[in-house]
Image (cartoon, rainbow, N blue to C red; front, side, top):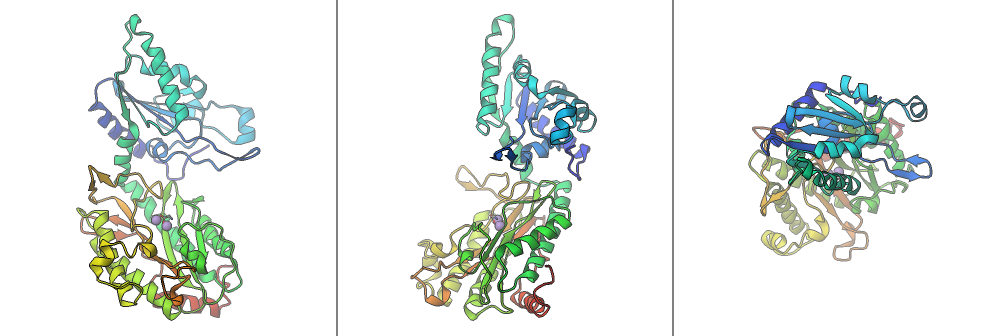
Length: 452
Ligand code: GLY
Ligand code: MN
Ligand code: MN
């Protein structure tokens, strides 16, 4: 039966209470509806592993498909539509909480079978003034709500009021998910620890002749051993010129002496992501050109870290990183001009490609807006962001000297904003060049087999 190991009924109850309080400010007859994620077919008779929607998991902790959560301001009630027990189906597909389980273990005041959803929606919308749901995220569910609305409108002559206002529930949930509570911080710290074990294992495993996916296996082994059941996203293990492809996914090239390997990977622990990138040499040391680019990206990341505290914006963080990158690209002769020109004319853009940060939480690119009315959102204590500058010189990029071509470096850590600045959740993963080179020479001396 789907119960995440860290499930804490009180945590989810307090989140629902916060959502209900927000809904109450919209009126006294508000109904909120939240469908869980769908099951996706992978190929014939095979499904993709099921993962509840992040909003749904945050609100309910209930981890079964075919479920819909309902909050009503009248009575402050929480109900679930979910799958009833079914011994035959459960023998094929696994145990279900059932309607009793939804009430007894997941705190629902009432549970109804998911097969009754269409009629249930008509009942729930009858005499409600406001309906909130994640508008436009699930066309099938949108259609069900609108069909129920049409039926309720037909009942107005029977003294039944139909809703007249519609709210995007996602906005309410995402604003709350953006700032992490103590339960979430504990999970994100642990996810970061497990991710650190994976990166260190992969770094120790690398050796000429191994495939990129052998390092992927080292990551997966450490993640599962640490208690993470799945990755936060498909791991990127990009060696040599593949490191210049931002979301490289093939992971099937043979590592060669002299290559850099860029690994962007993070485990997911009980729905919470980590997102880390490290770049290291297959040989014991970086080449001179690789070292120059590496040190530049590392310095850009350090400058970005310096900016992180409540009140600043991701633009501030990005700009701090860009200034260092611009200065460095000028100093090593890849660009000409002044720092201001490089930034104002986006001369760095062919090599930096992406911005420096995104929000992190239950989704690797987490809930939370970036701009409102054109103004960048300001960091607040408790939000979590990545800081991930990179430089990428495509192997065929004739704009740069040959010595830089094929080099890709990204360094990414996960920062939680504190009252005074930040906590780097992923600080334990080596990234000083001397530390990486010491680790790599030790691993090669022991046959590169430490984690194999
Ligand atoms: N791994 C995706 C990202 O770094 O944003
Ligand atoms: Mn990443
Ligand atoms: Mn990232």
